[in-house]
Image (tube, rainbow, N blue to C red; front, side, top):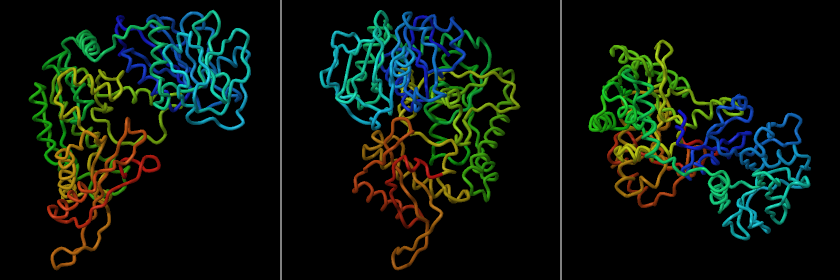
Length: 518
């Protein structure tokens, strides 16, 4: 879904940098709509796609412009017509194509640096401090520039830290303004997209709701939509947007797969009904336990859960007459991943996407959130007055507790882990720690350990607690929870959950570990 014509936009052409999504997020934080497009996209051949485009940004890349198969770009199509900002590889590419010289650096320049020279009359560097800290990440450097290039910034080791092409609003910078280590990077991006490109800062959560609901009304009319709810942020916000557009013509289905947190099915269902949504709850616990019987392999668990979810969802959806659309809570990173420069990820986990399209259902798809990042979804949800308990909910894996039980699944094991998880999560909330943690949960390990309870030796289960800080789940650091809290939590678990006699805390970060254990 594109913004309507009241919103100008920036296009970010992606050359495969790990930081490209960060550029988009920083631009959006300025209330300006932007999209990420692969550098070789067919959009380049469609002039109509650029009617609302006020400027373009060329991303970094793991490639070198000196490589025989280095990504290329039709710069002449834009230079002198709309403002262009090249970042790292993008800057090197423009210099290289214009006849400048790019050479391998003696050593890879990676990390913090300071700008020793700034042309402070340049609009790009307006309000940027002398000696401003920037972040470098490149193996090549621009060593010679064409005569019509003007150097705007330098560091101690990088002469061409920033430049402008004379007679054009075309700029290049060697550093990365999108990462937090470039302390004034947001100011520089604002200088480009607001002052140089002339973008209006009117892309807000309220405006998104207004335009999206209007678009949904126009698209759906009186048609019926079925949507799979998960209890998470994305599907909940998608449901409320659709509800505002079509009311009771939205049929939401919430499936209890028996792998949710303790009491979650009842609590979430009550929240949804309190929001006025037309929701049907389906108790399918025994069906899921049946297909998971004796299954230990994580991928097989995911596949079994995904297939069963589709079966249950389809059976319930078929009870509704005249449905034409399937609603999904797909968000922008999912879209980016599927059309990225590198193509779909080779190792995407195969768990079901709640609300995914069963092959046998002849339905069109509507995705109200497919232009938003996760943090933007939360802001839109706040604008919609959605229950903070849903908006603030930690991410929870699609396969639920199945991938937190590191062995075969039984109702008894699920019950143990639900109790452990409830003590941990409720403890975080009671101690005011929940909102300081990005994701937390407990794992039931496939080992038993000896213990002493009273005068008896025990041989019972071990559970691991996990809590991490993260922005988007791509990287994560373990949370230094207070020892007193961990001691109290461990004591409660061992005393209150029959079958557990040992609690450990996971202090590994991602990478090299993952957030989940399976």
